[in-house]
Image (cartoon, rainbow, N blue to C red):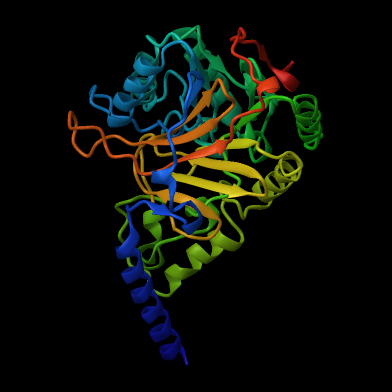
Length: 411
């Protein structure tokens, strides 16, 4: 019996491995999006651009990082009528340690590389925090978060770190007239140890930010709204419970890429555990699952919302229940993503998404990826999509609006 089960599992893994070789690192576009390249280009002037760049925490510090070079081109082309949103996991592996920590110098180099790249930009820069910035969710993570926030704002005073002081939010930024950015600190709901708004006895109202978010969305239904958080709500990658055949045989490579200790059969329990029970950073984990369920319950009430996240190291787009859901976590790492399912587009490749907002009301999603070789011609476009059509003439506005920032429940 045991031999038969082992043989079946081995045959299934070989089949999975063959399948993966056919699509790994190739862009996947769902049948419903197959005509994307034939869509007419948008007409009229741009109103605002939004760069959504996640998981920059492992950027090259030698001045030749491909994603930062691509972002520099985006910033130069965009000018002041744009916003760069850094979607968390800004310093690997565990955020910004204390000054006396042996890993502090390396962490500063990685963070300084990002800040130096963003410093010349005349538009807005907004930082979010991710699980790694909170010391991977450990009990002392709040101190790591406060250190990083203070460091970023000291070195780049024009930037925003939202929501401030580790609160869950929602925090808002009025990017332009009728264009609102809402920022959530999704790590707050899955974090261990002290968090702002949680009493020493552990008491807190974890539902209150969702009630505040729903009220905020009701009051701003006349606006185009982008919501940014670190954790994705849909994902075909590791944190969504998707694993490669290799990770069934070498499960420890999910923890360290060089941990090639073969554990056939036994190793399959690790992906199964991550899929059904989940580590704290996985959708299956009870706290993440509850946060996701409550957030989706609110978002599904409002059509045409755009939710952007990082966390998984790839590029993914989902159009589901009248909403648009992005995963843009390929700022410095790439990892396996499975095609199909609810996804309209996936790609295991470095890069980021740009949202382009036009004066006529159209909103376009663009996939920006660096070329394979530094200094080479720009990489060919692999996917774009018009997310929202042109607005009715009465609803259009051509006048820019000065940005305002509201900290929401952080106050």
